[in-house]
Image (tube, rainbow, N blue to C red; front, side, top):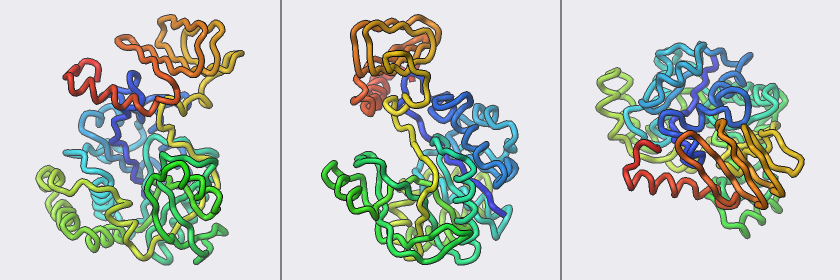
Length: 352
C-alpha cells in the first residue's frame, strides 16, 4: 500500500508576524481557505487516505496539527524530540511506516507547498509508486524552471530509463546546490535542469537501507528506535546527525530517478510569493482584510481587522496582526527571517 509522510516541522520565520511558533506557516491559510497542511492532505485523497497519512512536526504544534487534520489518526501525528533535518525525519517516518506495513511504498512531501491540479499530482505519485514497487530505487520530483531562480536546488536530468503508467522516468545525473544568477540562467537555457521540489517516493525499506549505507550511525540509531519505541526515540533522535536527505543520501545513491512534474508547483517561500493567492484591487495590490490603498501599486497588504491604509507607495509588503506590524520591500521579503532571528536574540518570546 501507499503511505504518505508529511514533513511539518518548519517554523515559517519568513511569514512573521502571521507565522509564530505555535502557528507556523503550514497551519496558516496562506494560499486558500484552509491551513496549508490540510490542503496538502486533501490533495492526496483518492490515492492515500487519511488513515495512511503520517505527519512529523515539532512538539509545540502536535495538538494544533491534530486539530487541523481530524481525519488523520492522532497517533500518526508525531512530535520530533528535536529538529534534526530531513534525513532524521524521513528515517523516522520510514521506521513508523515499515513497522505497520513492511512492504509499504511511501511518498514524502512538505506540508506547505501549493500544487495544482491535484489530479495531475496524484497521477505522478501513482506512477512513481508503481515504479518503486516494481523496480526499487529512490524517486524525486523535479519542476521545469519558469525562470532563473537562485533559491532552489536543481536536478540534472539524464536519459530515460523507464515508463511507469505512461509517465517517463529519468536517471538523475547530479544534484546541484542553489546557484548564483548567472549559473541559474545557464541551467534554464540548457533545458535539462529541473528545480528540486523536495518531494520523494520509495519503498520504506529502500530508504532505510540507503540511509544505513550512506550514514551508518544514523542507520544504527533508527534501528534502535525501531526496536525500542518511545523511550528509544527520546534517547536516540536528538543524537542523530543534523543533515538533509539530499546531502546525506540522494547526492550519493546510484539508484536515484527523477519524474518531471506535470503540475504547477510553488513552495510559497516568503511574503513575496503570496500575491497570486490573494484578491487584487484595481491597482494591482494583493490584499486581505481591511485595507485602503491610495495611489499605491504592486503591494501585498494583509490586516487582521484593523484598518491598514497605504498612500503613495509601491512594491511593499505590509502585514498587520494584533501585536505586530511588518513593513518591508517585497524584494527583501526573504530577509524577514533575519528580523525573527533578532527577536530571538533579544529574547522577545511574546512575539515569536
